[in-house]
Image (tube, one colour):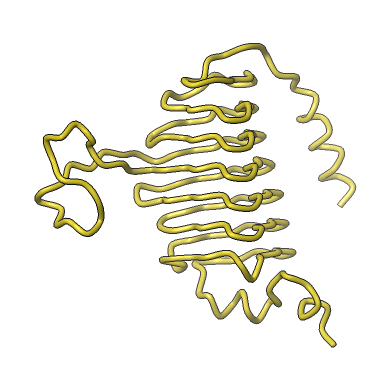
Length: 190
């Protein structure tokens, strides 16, 4: 019996049937994950997408990435996740949002001429990390080495190698860059 039949992860043939734009090597995807517009989703090598994740729209996932259970990625305006970035459980990345001022109607069931959508591509640069339960708003750029603490709300782009926390998220300290050296050693060992 095929090992993938004994796990909650899809077999390579099942992954191929979804119709992703591209899929690299050593990719693990839960059978309980959901994908919409799969042809616009590109996945690198050594990626794991866990149970109950929801990915929709224009999404580019680099290599050595983990997307933990219940993550929500809505890439209407694009989401780009660079190598060695991590997304914890119950994180939401929204690249577009309705205007909730009361001046417009809201929701996908309303024609666009009655709505006002705003948005922008979300980018997680190399070694970015988002803690459990955090929300990332449209257009945010998490610069290289950024770490977002649990339950944080991020609506502004970040500085490199900085830890952010809170609602709204604010910089609280610098982050070590040692992982860059570890990345080099790790990649040389492959």
